[in-house]
Length: 464
Image (cartoon, rainbow, N blue to C red; front, side, top):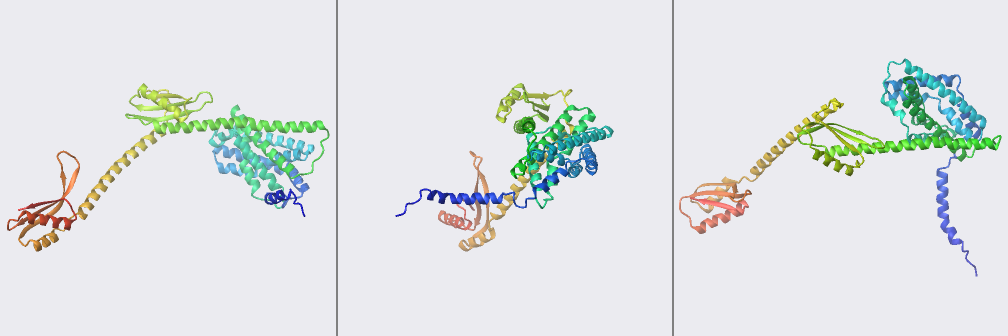
């Protein structure tokens, strides 16, 4: 007699899970086509140095990016992304931390500092000499970093180091990472801030560069540890502790402020969308026109300002608008209505022209719609008249067969209006003249024949 193993059923149940786990590991494995560890480290190490061609390429890329920002050309800025060598020392920092190579970390930080200094100097000189000093949208976009910039840089860094660790390099990944992480334009924007004395632009743009650099280095560090590269020993435990503390401090510097800024941007976007919905739904007035509105977000007290022309809006109507604002998520916002006097109000003339043009178009469309409706009604009436037209000649001939003494005959469908009701009624009106007087029985016989022949229950027969 054999005794069943109590663990046997569990083994059978765990087999499918083990197979699924094995399939997932094989599918997502990074061991396939993995390049030699020493080759990858040497490749990253070569990209750290900023001398000779790397240095000149950096200067040229800075000029290209600065020009692109100055003339607001995304295509030119993208070109600067692709030729910029700034990824080298940033990935070198992540690699050095990942394999505990203090010499590589020091060398990468030194070269990154040189690259940043040259980039700021070059872009500052350009913007000092440029006759164009207006901050375009492409430049302003680099002054407000958020957590999404950190996420883009992190995942871009993951893609870059994974592609760099392959034996056959994936040629389209590194350019894509360069475009996505955008290391060059923030430095150029920081140079613009120095040239124009705008501390806000400098701080925002340099912080964006710092976020991108930290997240790319962090992604490189994580992949190097995941691939289990051989790690060196730090000279002393104190140095190892300092490196770890620096890593965590850098991550916090990148994540915490950018998360807060991202949260504020989300709040601003939600407020602006809510204001737009409120204005669209509630701000259509009779005898007055909304020519402009401005939604000013503030983390403490936001404001929605309406500018009206025409008859003044009564206070009761303004108070009614305020009571409707909480339904649109604007309960904490202040409503300001400017009307009549626009001495201190900046009116968007283009917006006013657009509003008037929209009103003319809407009026024209409404007029055309009414005319189309009238035409359709007339067409339907004509079609109804044509389809309901009675075959008078045929009816006369058939009646002549039944009543040979008929002399005159006509028939038509007509509308009859009751004096006590506005609702019309349709009857078939028939007039016939005979050469002799007919009895009531003969008249009813003619009516029944007409009802059957014309498919109409309501017959009005006039006999002469």
